[in-house]
Amino acid sequence: MAGDSLVRMSERSEVTFPSGGEVCAAYLYRPGPEAPPAGGDGRRGCVILAHGFTGTRDDRLPAFAERFAAAGFVALVFDYRHFGASSGEPRQLLDVGRQHDDYRAAMRFARNLDEVDPERIALWGSSFSGGHVLALGASEAGVAAIVAQAPFTDGVAATKLVPPRTSARLTAAALRDAVGSLLGRPVHTVPAVGRPGELAVMTAPEAWDGMAAMTAGESRWENAVAARLLLTMPLYRPGASADRVRAPLLVCVCDEDQTTPPGPAARVAARAPRGEAVHYPIGHFAIYEGAAFDRAVGDQVAFLRRHLG
Image 1 (cartoon, rainbow, N blue to C red):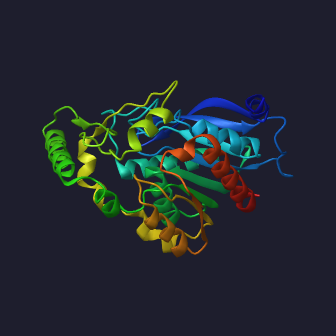
Image 2 (cartoon, helix red, strand yellow; image 1 turned 180 degrees about the vertical axis):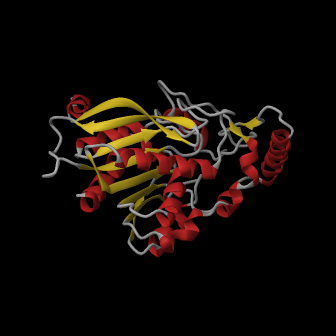
C-alpha cells in the first residue's frame, strides 16, 4: 500500500543529458498528483542524486528519489559516464574530475527544466559521491543545499583501513593499468568489493553482503573498476574543503561504518559554516534498507523542506 501511494505521488521518466562529449542516462522523478503542490510560480526545488563507488542509478537510489518527489521536489538520478546506462569508454573508468563534471552537467540540465526553480538545486551524494557533493559545494555557486550520506571525506583515512598486503597488490594493479593506458592497452580492472582477505578495493566485513543487497534486482552494476584510480584515490580529500561549503549541509554519519570512517565525516559537519550531523548506530550499507533507510530519508526530507522550501 505504501508503494502504491508513492507511485501516485511521483512519476518517473527516462532522460539524458550531455557531459564531456558523452551521454549521461538519468531518471527524472516529478511529483505526482497527490504530492504537495508547487509554489505560486509553478516551479519546484530539485534534488540531484548520483551513486557512490562503482554504483549505478538503479542501486537503491530510486527509493530516495521517490521519497523526495513524494515530498514535492523534482529528483534527477543519473549514471556517471563509463558506468551503468551512460556512454563512455573504457567501461568502469572512475575519474573523480569527470564525475564532478557529470554533476555539473546534471545541474545545467535541471536548471533548464520548466518546472524547476534554478535557484533551488540540492546535491545528494552517498559514500564516494558524498565526497563529490562536498567538493562541489565548495567550488560551485548556486547550490541551495547538500546532503552527504556516509560520505568519503579523506582518502588517507580510508586507505589506512586497507590491509598492507592488499594495498601493495592494488598498487601493483594500478601501475599496470596506468602504464597500459599510456601504451593503448585495454583497461585493467580490479574488483570493487570482495570478502575480507580478497583482492578488492572494499573488503570490510560489511562490504560484500552490503553491496549484494544494494545491487539486487535489475542493476547494471559490475564488480570492477579501472585500477588506475588507486594511484590518486589517497589524495582525494573532499572533506578538507568543508570550511568553504557555504550551502546548508546535512551529513548523515553511520557510527559503525567500516568502509568510510565516521570520525572525519562528523568533523566535516562541525567545520562547515552551515553544517549539521545526524548520527545513526549502523554500518555503511545499512542506511539503504529497512528502518534505517526510513529514518535517514525522513531526516533528509525534513532538511530539504527547510532549505528548498
